[in-house]
Length: 305
Image 1: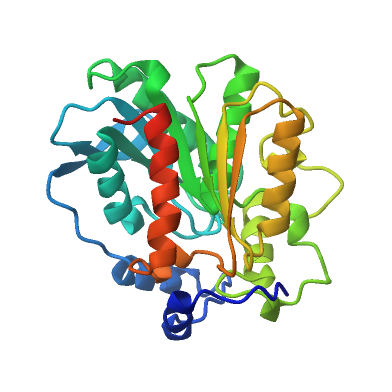
Image 2: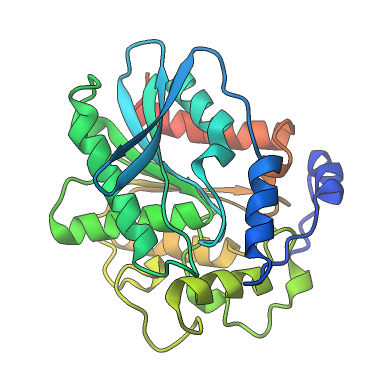
């Protein structure tokens, strides 16, 4: 367990957060409860609509001011729960503050829809954003991809697949405590009680559901596990943010190091004492505000105003 002291403004929110224990039989209940508990208000100055075109399903946040860029946003949830509405407030704020169109991907979840369903849906959403960029008044080179937790992992996988297919890539990757490596879930030396909110028991359930196999095996399908991709050269610049009490700290550090070694521009932003998913549990904490401000600053330099 990482013993970095927790920021004081994260202590009370953590105590009030209900425990998360994922199981196949409990998924319908958890999905229903989280849909209600995480419902958010839309900020003024941003219009929201749902769009469906072919295989692409996106929730689109458009600022009142003319947009100067676009962001494909991918929600978290361990690859087994989650929906774009979870991050309505976050996406609307990004749209307003950066003057960008945010397209939040609606993707199929495991275990009912294992790999590659989720990644295929995310790539369809990226295609939608590219196709509609000109009509939205956005240059294609000012489009980025971002996501948190499982969404961060899908964003990293998308960038890898687009590179290998020779298709237009994002201007940047915003990877927020990304879920990158199934081998973490296979580690017997990490007990469930070692991490807050997202522990390794949940991590094992998420990865096994997505892969349709035990995590940590000798091989994984291409793009299913971003950290297993051997060649990371030629990928877009990346911002990786993670707390030092997060289960994903080691794998995120390792991915950032490998990106740098491959010649990719990387910012690794660590939050001392922060646990996984703290912005959702403690949205008003100063620790959260500073973390999100760093993300906004990074995106502003690349796609925003």
